[in-house]
Image 1 (cartoon, rainbow, N blue to C red):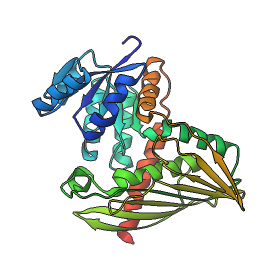
Image 2 (image 1 turned 90 degrees about the vertical axis):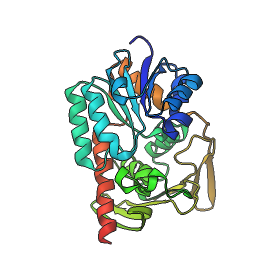
Image 3 (image 1 turned 30 degrees about the vertical axis):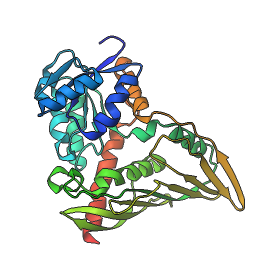
Image 4 (image 1 turned 45 degrees about the vertical axis):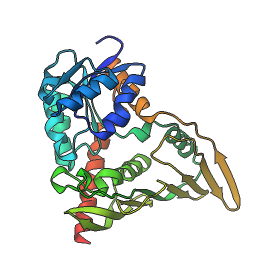
Length: 320
């Protein structure tokens, strides 16, 4: 390990090929080094397109490669625990797609294994590294909205193909696991707390939720609403309302240049936001933590809270 983290990638998932591997190329402190897939054709294609030095037909071979510093895991949700634990036991630092596990118990076991092996582990919420999120933090720190009373966040899209792994119950599918986890994470980040009451409803198909709404009440008086769905497109809008007015955050989880808007009575204030490369910023931040032995920006206690809350929302929806 010198000044760049050499990443191994477990699988050729769409998010890896479209976003995260290109981010490794663009990052100043990382590079795509090894990739594995059960398809030789996919391995050869990835090497040709992205310049991987090594290609394997087995994920275990990536973990056995002494030149791999860290692994990126974009596998189906139900496989995260197995391969995070294997990677940690192999001494590799781990960036794993969200949700990190299927419940807090899985996440706690992954964290214990990572800590025992002295490796970094981070749940991959790329929106946390955008200019928009940084600007939002500044506005909230400066109490622009006053005391927060309500947060409503939406993340939905229209899914046509129901053979997709997103609706495969055995692989940990469902709209909450796929996109609703972002509003859950946002609420946890804003409140730094766990709700005292959860009410939820969902529509199911193929044994998973294809649309879900949850209402969360926090002891400090904040009400949170999470909306997620595979049944229609949304603009990923978040509203944060407080005693001084309301912030409207469009493209909440994206890296466009849409400004943040603030409404107070009849007055509108526009806060500019610069476009950025969210995945590149994520890779650079994680790699910097490895190179300089710093704590990862998304703490492991936050990941426990995220995944525990997702689990509890599902329980509330099934009871509702």
